[in-house]
Length: 125
View 1 (cartoon, helix red, strand yellow):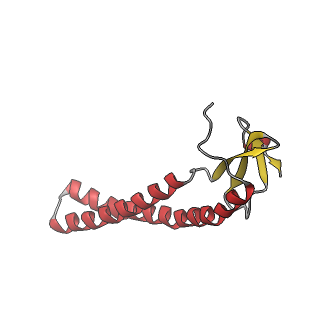
View 2 (view 1 turned 60 degrees about the vertical axis):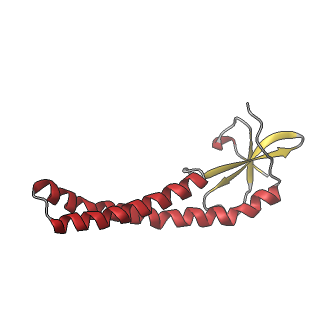
């Protein structure tokens, strides 16, 4: 197993929780925006496939731009944190490497688990 680039103290990891929550919160409306943009594209694509036309092409172009913008932002945010809403911070506890474990919507980090253990094995700090 590869050693992490750095270890987090509980205070350092806790300091990141507000940013993490804000990032998760920012993803939700973008996912909705993405779904709406895809829906807006659908009739234009169908129309172009059936008979084309300049009006349909303009609508498709606008919908495509909106779709790309939303998609790029979602990908940026999702790549910044884990998609599942679960984040482990490498840390040292009682002289050994463990993971401080944060789950989306938890107001602070209250759990940890052994390296190699999963969410089910979380223990309270």
